[in-house]
Length: 622
Image 1 (tube, one colour):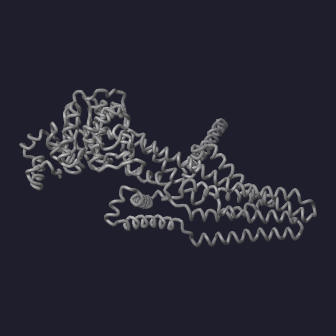
Image 2: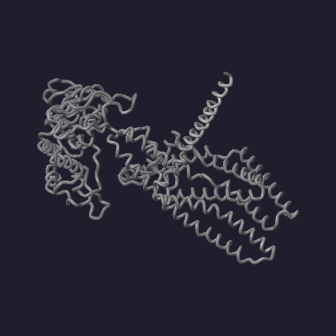
Image 3: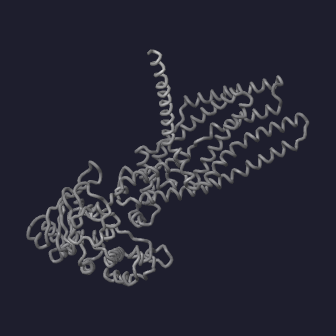
């Protein structure tokens, strides 16, 4: 019985050891895989496999050649001492020397090309990560903003050298590392323990120097400084802010803001990477002791005849060349480049998760027939954050128009985002003919919706593409422009930007008419839900009244939701909804709400009092 137990325990113990060993290996591999440096090197072949292979091959070859050169010098010294023929060693020495000189610029060019390919690959992935999610929560997420800034700004030189330069710096460090390892191996032919001592001494110096160049840029303080510096940089170099910067004389403030935050980054790096006196002194003592002992031993063996002049020359050069270990390896440029790559990979994962919207397979063609319904809708931009909408229950009959009014922060634009399904509600549901929008594919629903937002885009494209980004006939585009009061603004093929050949810029009001034409063209091509978020804010009162009457006529039969601060626009809607603190405070026609004497009447009277009762329509709703 005892024997049986002993035999039975043995395989379990071995299995336990094997499992522990396997777990340790897996854990080590997982830790290596999580390293930003490892992630950086794994994406190089994805950027361009042949260039990445050539880049690595040149690292190895350039690292091996100095050891071969040292051996060739020893061979030459030995031949000279022995009085033998010099042709062989001189040819080898000359060839190795020339190849070493030629490979350096070749490697630099390969690295620059690979860096450009890597930058293009990263930009492609970043663009895909930002535009592929169906929603837009990922673009407004505070948790993703810092990584997005790091991944986006790496080519601006704000967070480190561009990739085309970084690959050269990184290659230089790896070549020196390979050179040091090759020279240590040469020393190993003399004494294995001498190679171990010399290699360890220089490796300890490498560790010290590396710690003085590597720092964690993912801390909140560093990322905040990076974001502020990038923002100030954009203000300085981009055209749209140029007018106000010059008009208000704040160019000095912009520059000082940029330099202040850049200095913060420099100071954070200096504090994190400064050399400490103790380790530095210890490293110097170790180097002097080890290298002094090695050269004393070399001299002693040369004096006794144990080593010939050629061998002494080889090992002496190898000892000097081993110093490359201290300065090679994963140098200062790698953490910066790897940080940008790692930020991109995190952004990809995070954006896909945060910005994705579930989609069912239901068709949205022809909807809504009965109407839209917000059923007990609540919404928060961040978990645990304040409720922007809180229990909104609202029905919009198909073919009718609804104006939504309220003070700033009431939740008007958020309501519009939910109707366009740029977000999903955090509570309740938005329905079309009783069907939750989450049951439709987001793209299918959006084909039914067209909108003009208060921050609409001014595309630096021809007028025809500004009106119909997905294409339309010339007649449809011309008709939409005419309805928006924008006919005759420019030729359909004229680029709407002054910086292009034959390009032209428009006034704010003209641009707003083009944005309205975009909506009207979409309606003509089949859109059934129209969202107008401050559609005439940049037009004068007469222009607004004229244009909005045309828009209402053109969208008759569509389900229209209007947000505006002007009564001249609001009162023309079939019904008006007053939002207060994320809730529906009042709902009715203009006359009904005026008769009610509630919040809407208060706001109307406030406008009339401020601007004169003879023209209350000209006033902005506060």
